[in-house]
Length: 173
Image (cartoon, rainbow, N blue to C red; front, side, top):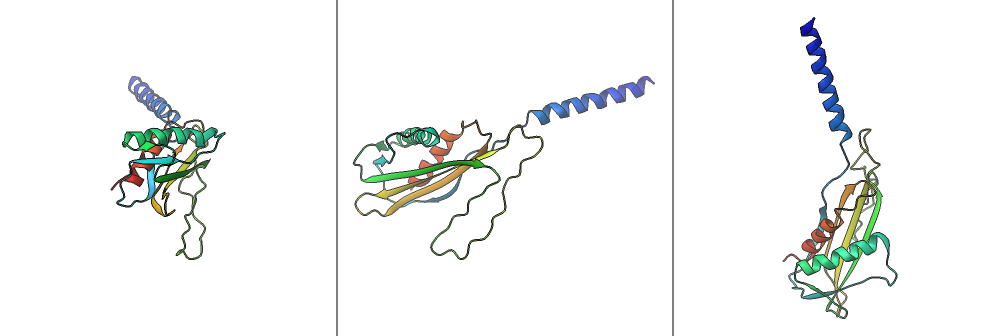
């Protein structure tokens, strides 16, 4: 009987440990680049486009991008030879976006790349951002990059990482 009780006790411990590790699971993937295009042009300064009463997620990304350009030794100033425009969105993780280009054929439905599971603590969201750098004199696209990460809706701790990846991807020579 003692041996039987011990086996049963070990089973309980194993289940308890399994429950602890499952309940600690959160939804998060590291920020990654999804596409980049850059030119050999060296950037010394850029002008970041923003709106006067910018607020919310776009304002947070603007702050992060300003710091990311500074980390690369690129100044952010009005009237610079290069203009940077950017976008950011947050939506349910299961919703994907398909890029469309001029040479693309007919669009096709895309399958979700992430499915929420019963053990996730939140309904995950996808934060996506893109950055485009234009030459002021010609208006030509010089560089661009886009990326994303998955997270719980209230956790934007990876926004700075994503901003740095966008800047690094767009200005890497």
